[in-house]
Image (cartoon, rainbow, N blue to C red; front, side, top):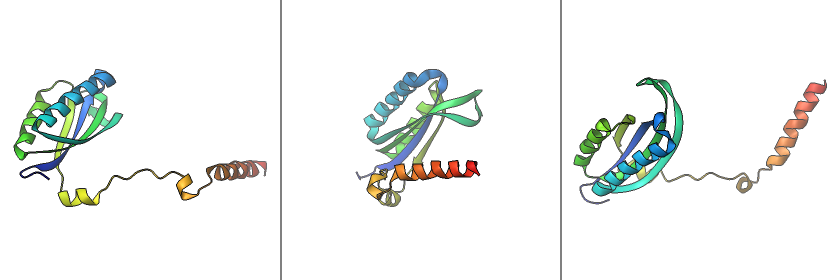
Amino acid sequence: MAEGKNLYETVIVTSAKLGEEGSAELVNRFKALIAEHGTVESVDDWGKRRFAYPIQKQTEGYYTLINFQSNPEFTAELDRRYQITDGILRTIIIKRDPRHVAAQKPQKAVAAEENNIDVEAIAVEAVEGAADGSAE
């Protein structure tokens, strides 16, 4: 890790009214801003989600997680830019602990074949079991 730089993650919730393309454009603008002041490590687009409660009279939005590295002073500027940008409903910037980042390695999905699980046999058993149960 570079001297004086911290690890951060930010979640951006953009308005569903922007559409998928508008949301992606807005996220790309912020990725470019972050890249100017640090380094973008990863971007995870979570897609369109329904809110638990209305936010600014809207019930859906696009969620994006950005992991980045920058100077501590930049987060205040990033937050200010979030607040004055139209189309952004909610944001959060969190400082990540480097001790936990090293422990959290990316987990890849394990395929059923790698675990020697016969998915077709399980499906056939489930269908036969349901057929036997309804025949009684």
